[in-house]
Image (cartoon, rainbow, N blue to C red; front, side, top):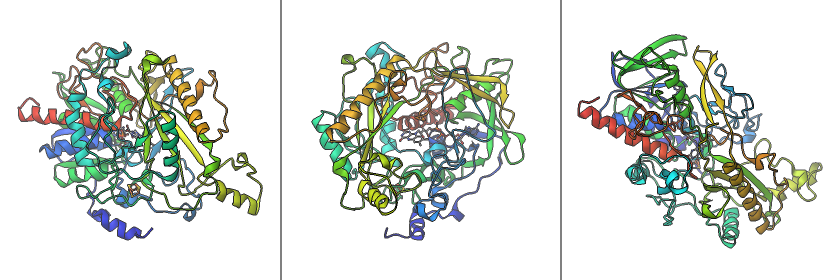
Length: 584
Ligand SMILES: Cc1cc2nc3c(=O)[nH]c(=O)nc-3n(C[C@H](O)[C@H](O)[C@H](O)COP(=O)(O)OP(=O)(O)OC[C@H]3O[C@@H](n4cnc5c(N)ncnc54)[C@H](O)[C@@H]3O)c2cc1C
Ligand code: SF4
């Protein structure tokens, strides 16, 4: 690597000393109070401060700026843990997420028989600091699932409503990709994609033979300097947070320019408890726990925007009970917490003999795959209703703790000393794998509610989850397994693990484990069947909005975050217009 860390930090253009410190609320009343600073909250903070609003942002976690806090370019060998996971860093010591499947003092509960995992970030920027940055638009059919196959519900808005906001995101944030003209995978305004790595070329070759499209990935990583941010230098470590902000994270791309307007007050360590309302049913602000002192505090605002993540915002609405709203806000139809979905997922990896004994070369690239496979089949000819896309993995990533575990499964692998070292060299880069990411149809058995028996360390009642996959998802995942095994066989490879059985759910990841929870405050025109209207405004509360994954009516075979941000920008535009008109 030619660049030093110091030089990289200089490139980032915002040394730690110049980052604005978090403040306590300073105004009697703000124009807008936003809860949560991740994808949805950061987007709203950016758009609303640009529109001239005085905004206070309540964030449960501490400040975190990648140019100051990222472990980019740290070698695993420099740490005695060699990058292994810790209780605080559950995806590895260098991963850029404070939080995890369990957060100290903040439990959630599971209904009997339920298997569900809830990943929570507690930091400025939320999960956008370490997310995969696969940035896909939903396609036209993704907003009209019921019209296509009679399942779930249609959205009250369509692709054309969001297209201008997807365009704005592409232009402002920047992402690489290629225009392919695929019907339900809309093109975008892309920077050039990086070239495929060696193993990705092999995957492209065999997928072509099997009739599966394998195209350049679409990731919010800059391959050219863009809007004052430098291009990626291909260290392959996006999940650690990018020290030069060449990839998208909310603090680097949304929060910093919002602070620069002088109209954003950032309050970190503020755990929101409930939205307060007046006698007329309008939101008056948010009460929160100051985590440093444990004291209850309150901030007043003309408009409240919840963006604490889909399940946490549902929790806040359900915990905001009053005589006027005994079941919580937006819950007159009992819909808050219902329609919870996650992406389906399963993985298969295999040993590819022709990749053994490779010529050593650097193929670090962007921090994720340079290619992917969008959904390519017609569900009318299959035994499941919705599609999936395929993510590809392999290559020569930086070795760290657990590297090439189970080496004894490779031909002649294992043993001791020189032979073992030789085997590691021989088989390094000879594993290729696939992860399916598919659409789940909302069902009546998958939802969350308040568990009135349990409170967290702040005295706030916690969520209880219910979860069940239906045959739609199980059949889809069986198809993924068969496809991935066919791809590996076509490469002349060997899969060590047998095909999972029906009793094993065909290898489907438990609910929540793909970390794409959506739908808990879904959008619609009818308050008895939805929580927010098409502008993301909570039914029955004229100045309360939700801008995270909660308003989604359905998943898609695409990852959700580009759509979360498009919806948040659209809702923010609506708030700004209503404020200008004097209605908010
Ligand atoms: C490892 C990983 C990889 C991923 N990869 C992709 C991908 O490639 N593509 C994709 O589209 N999506 C991906 N995702 C999902 C993506 O990160 C989420 O969809 C997105 O971050 C959701 O945005 P959000 O604003 O709803 O929530 P978050 O980004 O989680 O932000 C929520 C914020 O609210 C704060 N908060 C929570 N509760 C409170 C409270 N009570 N009071 C105050 N603040 C609170 C949190 O601290 C946090 O900062 C990935 C997620 C993970 C974990
Ligand atoms: S791969 Fe590129 S975008 Fe990702 S952390 Fe490295 S330099 Fe930043």
